[in-house]
Image 1 (cartoon, rainbow, N blue to C red):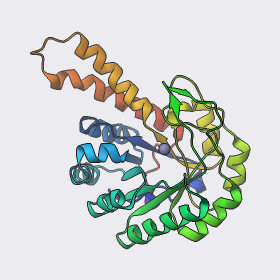
Image 2 (cartoon, protein in one colour):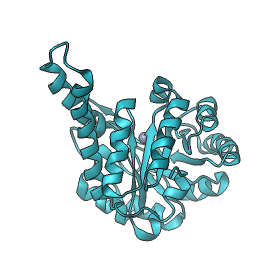
Image 3 (tube, rainbow, N blue to C red):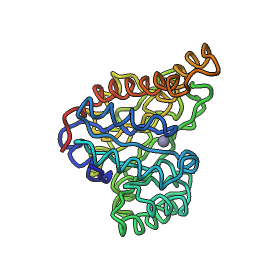
Image 4 (cartoon, helix red, strand yellow):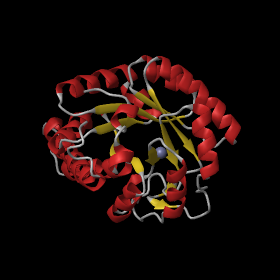
Length: 284
Ligand SMILES: [Zn+2]
């Protein structure tokens, strides 16, 4: 079934599990991602950055994901990750995405509220869910987290105000993770997570899941994280297999056969992550 983010996350807080949101990097890997979820009988969120959305095309993406989702016995959400402007979001909504993220977290709180409200108003008219971000999730250099204070933790009091003022379906919070981190592991602030969880009632989202150890991921989920974003780890697995296979290939070898190990590597990463997140058999 093809469902919204609100629908796919609705039981996560109650039963303390998280649904993985896995970044599509190219069209080839999409069927393998769905296969992973089917093998684990787990709901799955497929997400794209605005750049990937532009590269593949919003309509092609949503039609493919809808087709695969409606054939499967599991719930699937297609989500636009980290969109910064209204037009990018409008294109995804108009082309059938079931969820979008507006990232106005770099702006002052009041402006973040205004931009997010505008998106919620448009998306809700079309039955599409909205995620928004508070605080600042860090970035990385060559896979290692930058330790220069770029992570600004989400403040619980801001979270209360933000959720009430905007009507969002899920909140991305900053508790110490970084985007693109894969050579080191993040130091998370579980106290901040607890403080935010205790004063909120909507699903909380952890970005930068690649940079979090399995042990810490489990702690996050017990602490109330509902959605975990994993992007870099899939890219690393795909390219690692591609380097190996293309590196030793003859030019007339089938590119199809050369790509199969890459797609399979992505499938295995997702299957393992589903086990850590506890979403197996959580199909309703
Ligand atoms: Zn993110």
